[in-house]
Amino acid sequence: MASPFHNPDSLTIQNLESAFAGESMAHIKYRYFAKLCREMGDVATAEAFEATADQEVMHAFGHLDLLFPKAKMTPAKALQFAIEGETYEYTEMYPKFRHIAVEEGQHAAVKEIDEQIAESKEHAEMFKAVLEKAAKRFAALAKVEERHANHYQAALDNLNK
Image (cartoon, rainbow, N blue to C red; front, side):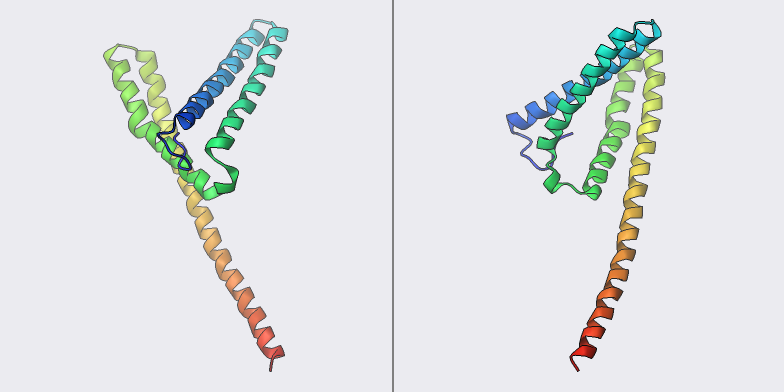
């Protein structure tokens, strides 16, 4: 998840990335614990986990604000980062994990990893399609705006005659 806006060798940046990962993991873990508690009929404990999970998300967002400053972000950049992350997952991360799971005979993990590889590939393709669609729309809008500018220029030229 290395931020392109900062020196990746910075210990502070590495710490922010680790903190983000930890807060994100805590959020999901607490949501899962809440789900289990609800299934067991313990709503009060579930709600305690859910409240804490919400706070963990806010902590993670705080780290992301430092790693991916809003002033430097655009929807196109966000999509590109998403494409890169999903592509990494299905081309490198999950295949490596799958190999180890096969070697260890962890068949349930292999099945889960195969599903994640397929989903990560779908996500990357979806983000690419959105990015391509946005590029086409912006190109079309640029042509429309050029026509507007030319129309106003013609009107201005008429006034100046």
